[in-house]
Amino acid sequence: MTSTARAYPNIALVKYWGKADEDLILPVAGSLSMTLDDYPTTTHVTLADEDHFNLNGTDQEGKVSARVFAFLDLVRDLARERCLDTANASATVTSVNEGPTAAGMASSASGFAALAVAASKEYGLDLDLRDLSRLARRGSGSASRSVIDRFAVWHAGTDESSFAEQIDAPDMAMISVPVATGEKAVSSRQGMVATATTSPFYPAWITSTEEILLEMIAACQAGDFTTIGEIAEVHATRMHAVIGASRPSIRYLNSASIDVFDEISQMRRDGLEAYGTADAGPNVFAISRVEDAQAVADRLAPLTRDGEAKILYPGRGAHLLSDGEA
Ligand code: DP6
Image (cartoon, rainbow, N blue to C red; front, side, top):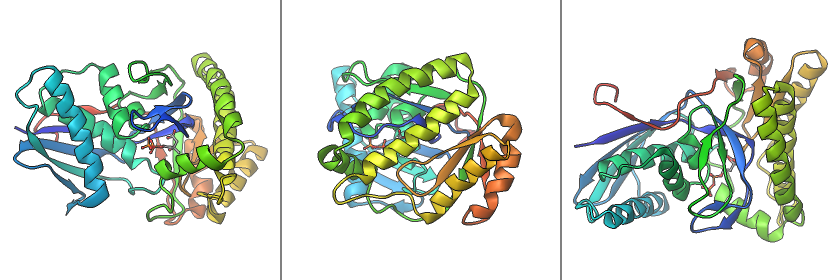
């Protein structure tokens, strides 16, 4: 038997940056995101004699596979708790990522969300959405949110209470503005530790994130696009500021990213309402109303690496695929 799942990346409107617990991956503050409807990761898990991980057609070794095997250990622990005979089984994991890996496109989020769904099924666990989100969280914090349809709030808290759940929010478009490819210089994981241990602004980052999350939840529930966009842009800017204040300084945005933020400001002055955000990499995302998405994409396309600004919409949380779909 093989279990197959698909998940999409998510882009945070209130960012997660910093852990209260490194091992359990508990965040210092809650966050809120939109799950995208493209750049999927599709993952197959089959019980086997040895753990094995293949990503995009290449067998993985070292750190990359160790992280996947450590995640399988968590799944096996759950199987053991439930006295399932799969508890000692190894597995072959085969994943295909349709977005650029490790370039600020949140491939770890879609990757671990898909793995959580496929592996828990293959090992015979019957997890509800909350426990799937808690499990995905242990692979990568942001993966907890890719389990959820459309918009997700990921709660800070304990191992029990730190999961993502769906929140109502108005339809909107997320326009991807890729300005660079390639692996990022400092992983999110390392960057978070550097920020927590060396950035003097870190305490203010935590308290301001808690406050802004409440404002964002209220704006989502009120369907207030302008406030959602303003908060998303300022919160992304604060994240890059707290990161930049690390010693030695860390900078994920490059000059091409800044040009995109400038163009987004100019669009607003021209009466076209859009807001910018960026994760731990140089690529920028613009947020707009659905009816403005094409105009925003047309304005930003010339600033991209390959001339294409792709329009994305709220998408499905991680889900199993049947044989025919895979
Ligand atoms: C900048 O979820 O990749 O994208 O939990 O260490 O795996 P780990 O980190 P990860 O961090 C994502 C950080 C971010 C902001 C966000 O998605 O909220």
